[in-house]
Length: 244
Image (cartoon, helix red, strand yellow):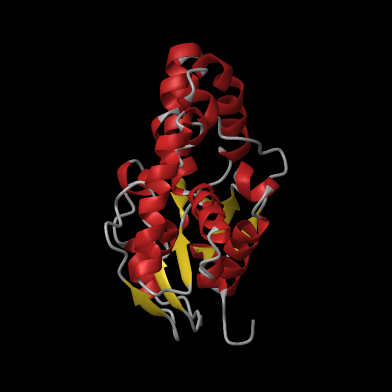
């Protein structure tokens, strides 16, 4: 299958390993991955902070760049949620009906990585090997917007050498929420403290998630407390093999 990669801003600027791992994994499974160089931000941060009209050029670009592809994947439940639920709304409100229709169509073809693997490619065992004790944080947008459900956990359970441990109060927000962490820093820090306490209580070596944004927030806190727990994107775990 020919699959277009939407890398996302955070992968492009801060966490390129998540995007690289997505490509490595899909190519190992026998698929062709293409990277359209004209891609930019999906516009989520604009929409979520009240700048819907300013997001229109980004929506137009995403639709134009990715419309030629039948399947698009992104290593981010948050960005995929925005593409599916916000693009057609912004296009209808500030663009036109034709753009809104195309945005809806492209959104339906855009998948978060675990969705693509299980729902489209019909695979749970991706041949990964990762000999570590791992706990998984289900990010808010992946749960409530993209609705990936237990797909990431199903994939992790098939990874050889990996010991998956349940995260207490897993569905509680880590406190990041994009600009929420800046505008409500004290509340965000308190939420992060609860999340870190639960992560450390598992005895895990690694905390994984499907969104680099939440991993950045959690990882920063765990590092400052010198817990020894690392944060690793789901794609990086699934791309790991005994020879890597």
